[in-house]
Image 1: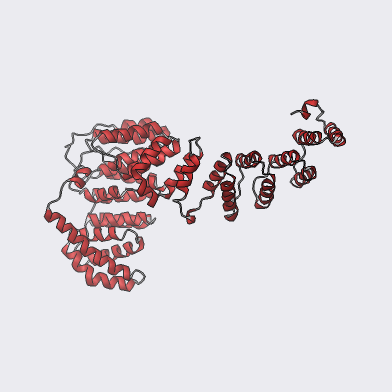
Image 2: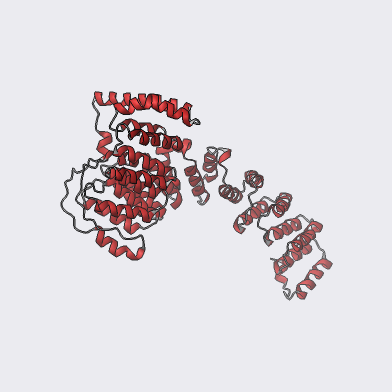
Length: 512
């Protein structure tokens, strides 16, 4: 579930949007540690009295992206992107040459960053280099060194560097960047939020809280909606739903406007905690309110409905994001297949096969293949079942679940395919699959029904090799086979063996 927990592009944009000049007067009450025992104290502290806030202390993030830009602003933005993309392309040509990168930056970067002294050029460049995190760090470090003798770095530039370091799983470097910014008296909401985000994506929830406590004690800047979005995500990851909901309530008390990231993080937390009603209620609130669901919201709901087995709603959401999911969200396709596998939906095999065709061969997952084996077995699609079994052997997948093995056995039995069952059992023995007595009993029953008594008797030797002793059921199968074939002497021998093993004999065994 990686998508559930990564910071969305919108959230990262928010980190850079809010300036340190926007201040909230929030009581510096430390957030308690993440333990359920501290829940009541957490709620008391998070609702502690605060001074009145100006509702417009921060712009609504939705407004930032929906307000129409003037033709001049649009032209300026496109001009910036064009210039930066040219620099990006030259950097990518030298991606494996550190000296070449520095040369390009010195020849083309200095002039560009001088023109855009507000840091927007570097931020845009790092955005365009998102798929090359190591190159992004090289560019950022060059800018740090270059800033010592030219234009100082801005808070937005430092925040972007901290974010990149966190995304690159290098928290120590993120801390180094934050400390450097602080030493230069650049402590803003954007740098604090970036460091909290770096801790969050790397699983350091306690350190994230610690930064939040420091943030609330700051005089020159205060937490923003981004800050609380990060906290909601942290609590959601830990399934501390009460903490998550208390944080959301504080957002309202502070007159901060929840944005798309706020609601998406709430839904992600509910999905992780398997709280389907709360997930759905939040989604309905979004649809009825000013902050409408986006593509990420629908992807979260698709996963949630798949996990809880609400297939009709899952299919409704899938229709909204079908093209995107088919192209970029293979894990969600797997989740939908799994939902169909666990259901008794009409035409589930067709729906499953339609989805399976969307998954590249390189995306093979053993657990999913086992689900397919079981579904095909339950539906008596023997050919498809055997294709999935072949796939499992090819990828050295060993099925160790008794339920799956019994589904395979039952399918062969219903289709009266004893030779195919015998071949499967042999492969399963050598492939390390779960060996159970039912495999051999089924073979005996089918051999007996076809009057292939010698082969039925040979199954006893196979059982002995795997230390599977004869049970009352084993003898009952032989009794029925010999009785149906009129082999009275064999029947008497089996009755004698049953008595020897202490099972006794009843005439009902011959009719069962």
